Amino acid sequence: MKIEPKTFQPISGQALLDLPQVLALQADTQFAMRVVASVLPFRVNNHVLEELIDWSRVPDDPMFRLVFPQPGQLEPAVFDRVADLLRAGAQEAQIREEVQRIQKIDLNPHPAGQLEHNIPVFEGERQQGIQHKYRETVLFFPSQGQTCHAYCGYCFRWAQFVGIDELKFASREAEGLVEYLRAHPQVTDVLFTGGDPMVMRTKVLERYIEPLLKLDHLDSIRIGTKSLAWWPYRFVTDSDADALLRLFERVEQAGKRLALMAHASLPVELKPAVAQEAIRRIQGTGAVIRCQAPLVKHVNDDPQVWADLWREEVRLGMVPYYMFVERDTGAREYYHLPLAQALEIYREALRRTSGLARTVRGPSMSAHPGKVCVDSIERIAGEEVFVMRFLQGRDPEWAGRTFFAKYDPQAAWLDDLKPALGEESFFFETDAPASVARTRLAEPV
Ligand SMILES: *Cc1c(COP(=O)(O)O)cnc(C)c1O
Image 1 (spheres, rainbow, N blue to C red):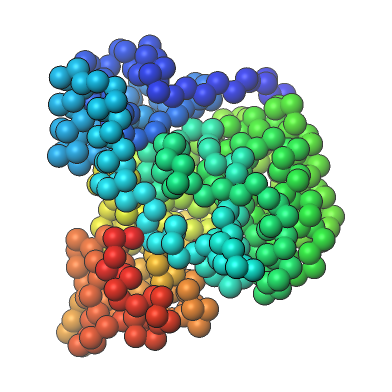
Image 2 (cartoon, helix red, strand yellow):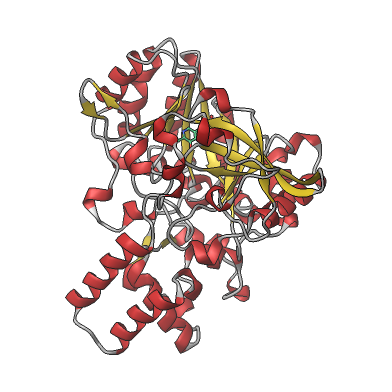
């Protein structure tokens, strides 16, 4: 298929608020957007504006709600503090100071102990850029891949985009990664994440991936990316798109599997011809595409949206993988849903698809003790309970284990849950190594 090339044009900051489509909105909507954009980072691009947002439905279009500032993204008290400063015409420096305080204190920049708990110490040094939480899989944050082609309003890694250097994960050294992996032969998977590793030029990506192909114990190289949605031209018409596909082929030739972990929130992301061409080209290299996304209010909190999304993924030869519960960070107030509702949407969507789409697991929380999903709500011995299950555990023995929590229609995260059926604590609190004790769960994660 012939796809016309496009030049990537990111739009953020004041330029985002000056777009003609935004200037056409009501004045108070525009002011609210300015308040929110002072605190949280936003970025769109020409593909998102031209192909993904349905401007006839704005401000209710779900894609618009996903990428443009929304008043509800800040708690009312926080919103008012910033709005008052802007209305009073406060000095730039004063606004910046208040905004940084909000970012560090009110918005919980690194949930689930990401910053403190998962960075390994190897040969006496903390391995910046590496996170190793589950035995088989190492997460790697290449320093050049810490931004995205556009930003999702719910992103739990938003702290990386706002220029607080000490909060950033980064690593310049592919060498450090290889050394770490050599010393950890139990690791079968490396997951490149960010930001979005696909913002890296192919030449840079090669420097990270090539050395891994010599490691016998590695089976899979995964790349977490939203680029199929935000910039599919990366795989089709960008100047180094063909070189990228050849790199993917070399992974296959080395006897390993390249898995593109595509972040797909809405069916519209897979509709453009360029996105479908990107999918075909990636699959042509032997790579497999697995799809995951968080379930978020105002965007995709509708079982039909998920059923359509999973069906489309399966039709295009991709594999539905995870449905996530929105994390407790950033604009969570706006996007989060109680677990009970998340479960209902997951199950209703599952019922509307065939078994081929039911490879998707969820709704899953990436919490401190592990990846935990809600399986069902049942009545056991007269008590209403959530049936919960570990998909991944900080202790590998926990994977597959079930536990019960008191039903609570408002609970939205693991640490909102209480043990059910007369138990004092959850098994993972008492069986836990000291680092996973209850006190940790109660910490602001
Ligand atoms: C989800 C996740 C992984 C990958 O887990 P899989 O279940 O193998 O997809 C690895 N590390 C961390 C920290 C994760 O959150």
